[in-house]
Length: 500
Image 1 (tube, one colour):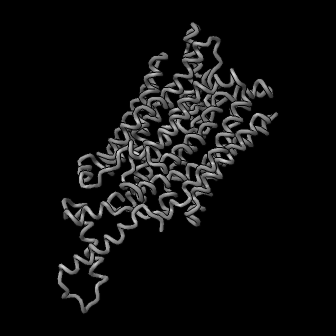
Image 2: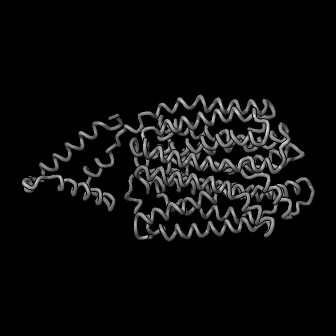
Image 3: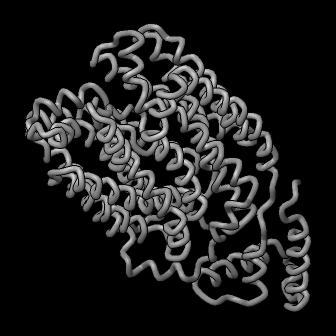
């Protein structure tokens, strides 16, 4: 399987999906142990008994990078503890936000496999640190390490999928599979952590995740050893991230990704207290509120992949429809009066997020293909920055907004933002009609092959030219043939960045 290209890319897809699964599970598995450390900070001793954490796990899940279950922030008696908990949960996204511009540039320069391997190594170190953490400072260091590892593993993994699955609809299907793994991690982590925490102790869930992370890294090492990454030197140089950020099409997509994730990021730390105060919800009801959201998220991914395969020119419409659904669902949340009613808008939010993510993540790769150079590290670093903005602000800002303005005003504001942003995606309506730039091919033709990558490209073009030439013209002068090839190139270049 490692020697065959199609099977190898499937194995790489498996490696990336496991990395994304681990990242989201690691964010959520920490939640049950928080009450112990809060008790220790209050002076109660903080014994790491399994019973209290297990109960805490059953009442909720973590809300990490693009997770689908809420972070159950334990009630605290002092404002300082609330701040500490908020900073702890936001530290991962904050560090991702700072590191992503650097990680995207590095990925463009050295390739996708080496940064992905480095990210998995850091995630392994972070998971091991969580297992042996005994105080808040160690937890904060472990959470920050996870953000550092995610900045490399998540960005390099998504970029690797876009690079290996260059054709549609295979690219949308592969990216949809990765998104489904993210949501599955959100669903699996609470029972996984709760059962192991209850019967095996606090460290066992983290040690299991660390072992899976190690195996995932070893598989990647077997598929793409560091000694083979030197071939990346013959690949095109990626567009700098600052140039991608000012690309209006990329900016529109990045804004949509950030806006659509704000409701999820801001509801995670606030909806539990609102449910208890407004409808007297029990602990098990609060914990189960987000579990059904996994299924509409996967359904949204499946529907979008199928629609994109049948009608690829409507990707912008799927994203706009998803943002409209998110906006309407956010506005409906404050109107709910019982446990059954609140599940419906939350499922609508997750369904809309699936539409937006599944439609716009492949669009980012297509924009890089047709407007820049087909190297995807920086553009998916921008996407990760968009997610990190929402999840860095959520644990810190959402509670303050609810305290000063109210829960209903928070939801109405988030819903209005999504509804107003949906028409902006009309700007992407003609993206599918763009033609790719031929600057890379021009360089190869004018300067001649300089490495294995260039030589293969030249041989492919020569073979195509011979197959199209009539048999009676086989003796045609080579200079005339070269002139005809250049004429065809110039005609195609005249349509760069134009619509057909």
